[in-house]
Amino acid sequence: MLKRPLGRSGLKTSVLGLGTMNFGSDWCGRRFADEKTAAAILDAAVAAGVNLVDTADVYGLGASESMLGRLLGKGSGSGGRRKNLLLATKVCGEMRPGDPASGGLSARHIKEALDASLERLRTDHVDLFMAHAPDPRVPIGETLEAFGKAVKEGKARVVGCSNFSASQWKEALDLAGKGLPRLEFNQVEFHLADQRVEQELEPLCGQEGVSILAWSPLAGGGLTGRYPGDRRRSESLGLAPAKASALVRVLEKAAQSKGLTPGQAALGWVASKSWVASAVFGASSEAHALENLGARPLDAGIAALLDRARGLCLDRARS
Image 1: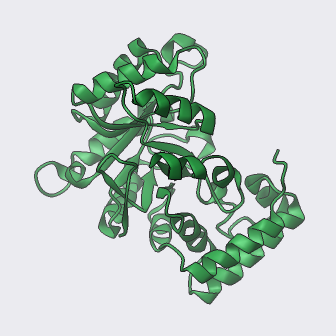
Image 2: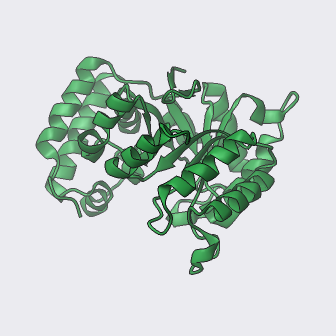
């Protein structure tokens, strides 16, 4: 599988990454994957060449990390499945919902949360460690100092952020010149029905040599062609029903022309963007994982066709 540089970190990620929000829990309404199913999904991803596995401490309030920890230690050879993978996790969400002290990006919480994540993951380090969201209560310099300490201690290899705006990311990158670590990547929602990343973050990628990791590249399933009703598809894509239907029809025709499913074409479109280091998808079954793993970056002609279609279909204002 094609791999791309992750910012200037020296690491390269597979253009498709595996998200594990639903491993061990039905967090955020994602369909629960039990340990047997999760193992099959993970093995399929590894066999296809995926090297990025993404989780977060808050997914299932530790359930995803705990399940991954068990699964990554298993498998053939020394080190189990873990040895050839880039493992990513996040910090910020409240681990005791309603208790602000159990989350955030303070230096104290980052240290405690990372140590707890490493224990659940049964490893001595993570390869990618990121702020799950901005924390307006804490100066970004304090967060970066804590991240830098984690890197120096060997507990994290590369640090980044998730769900940061362009201005928030730029503020952090500007501080990196003062001896603090660079946030080499930003994991944000990006799919065919959303233009915000190109408008706000793509320019920064070019200017600073940083990368995007795309979460929800299938728009929560709205771009798979499996949603039976216009209303549900419309809600998933954040578009008016007529525009959502029009966009999906073009996607389906483009996919058919290349012998792909709509989901594979949608993933391939995200992966065709050179500034996207990885499109991180989730799966609730081995069959869904195998379908997604059949995606590859689209050729220029089909990608351009979808670019034109989305330009005509997308609402300027999103709900």
